[in-house]
Image 1 (tube, rainbow, N blue to C red):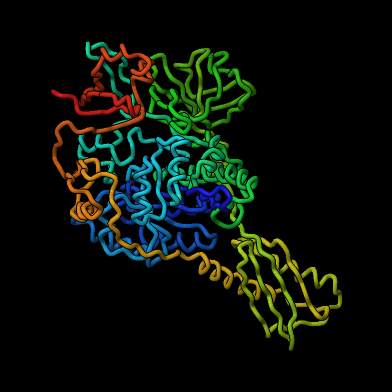
Image 2 (cartoon, rainbow, N blue to C red):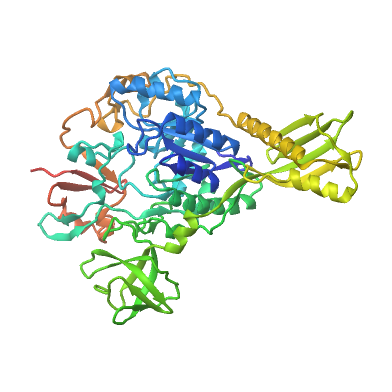
Length: 615
């Protein structure tokens, strides 16, 4: 149950397709990073070696940052043992948690490592989240479709930490429930191989054959951006704020992580009962701007309930930031109606009269006159977008942002020519070195000698630490050689790094099997059971009848390939609740030159259902 008086830890969770992106996430303020291992991740092209993950863990734990490894695909019987062995390897190298989808793994002998329930486990009801908590999951990734009021209801009924996506690409279907890609070419989204048919062009016709939309990206959504809803989500009970993007590059990860770090810090500082989940501060060399990284335009999705502007109907590609409209066109240049400055080398794009996205490069800017590489296709009054900002991209790419931990340094004289140097950080972790081999002399200039000691001990340079204070407590006015102080300081830094990594090493948590009843006694293919251990798991939890999942069966007659909150009737101003006469048009058919789908509508739950159209 949520306790408003309880101190809460708020986690910013960033993606990493590789170690480079993981380091960028940490250096720009992530409290945790999720990354794919050598196999079984939901982004098949974003796997990483055990060695790289181990190196990332070592760096992360210096700052109290956690590393979560994704094993969030469905597994066939012949893969279960290998996945289990991988989890044991990850536990051995100190991973903080694994994120899983396949319940069959819970029937294996797991090491004592925390387990997180992937969003692929379809977590959108109180009953489901309660079950996952009771079974033993340590964190649950909620469905993106949930509103803040729905999240609040779940939090009030559970105590498991809740994770929620706040930024990035959106799946149009409930995660873990999309079988469209698998039905087309056997590239299963639940196996990390989604071909993204939702980003393709489709046409839509009604029962009479009238075409309502022609060659539009009807299932393609804008990207999620909940920058303006952070406070609302914290109040609803979200504790882990997740950025999507395990296929994005390090510049994207750096910019978006830094953006949300600033937003979260602003709110955490207002609330004494909130604290961030890791250590240190970020000294950034650029000002993060979310709209300057890859995006398809932004949406709040369903965080405040149903809204219209969620789809990217004209293109699934990145638009970037809206820069204004063309005011005037000359022979080889144009001017804008806005004060936004453009740069040589910027990329811009616009929609033609046929609603096709076209791009140009800016060759030169002279005052208000902008010279593109070609003027063809531009029209006065046309809206332009900048999808590549050369100056900003250079700033991010060349940035020297550092993550630092404040420390107090104390150098004091003990007895018998013994001196000690200690370091105390913001987490109250302390390390001390005693030295009996220093060879001080009486200082000829005590003030200068004291200043030199402070200067040498404060030289923390390219380390994880920043000197907040340097205290000197000596019994005499000593002069020390700089090389002796430097050597002592380096020893202390090494010792303190070891101490911090030990303090923040992964917490062990044994998983115990239980017989908590599952909310349903019968399950169909949408339970995603494709191995015998998953079948045994559900049986142990009271499921009397279950069927194999989509990936296990060649053909399931009448199968729902997709169930989504994105309703094409609603988007076309024909919501059946408001316009019951629109029912005469049903069924609707979604089609392109390869495939055809029948659409039906579950108005009670405000959902659209996509099935293969009968031939």
